[in-house]
Length: 215
Image (tube, rainbow, N blue to C red; front, side, top):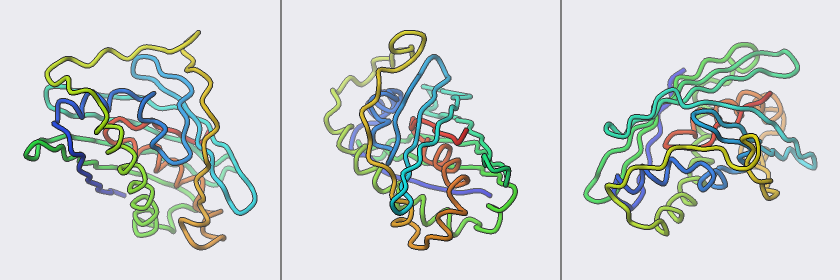
């Protein structure tokens, strides 16, 4: 299954590229997400999801397969499985940044492969839910970028671990994603949850988002 997303932020492409490399800074823009470690191209985190009165936390990891500053291009890989053994999911994400008259357009192509029960949902359901969450992310990201210092032309600092042993500082408690509110159907929310989380891990990683997978 292939999915396409695109969003625009009102800063120059050089500035956007630098900010989007800073996972610790932008991870809070991902609904329900917290970054727990980041070293080199490897990173890990958690996603909190609310289903009615129940709040669930999922943890996982991901990696940047490619980061080409000259081409303004990133490739991210994410994968996971349903803990109940109902299926698997993996995503390869290509994100590119391009100049648009002083603003930056971020194009995200996601190649998502799912097995098991998730296959019944197709791109329609996943696309609708991801678009809603992407809207929340881009609104937050626009604020982050608007407040970023203009340092165009300076190379982005290499990624390094934060804290002891590659662990990030203890993240603040974040508000969980209200998945029932997003999907509107309780039964669908429960069945879709493991695979949607992997999709979020990949599909919303575009442009430097932290990849958060189910374990």
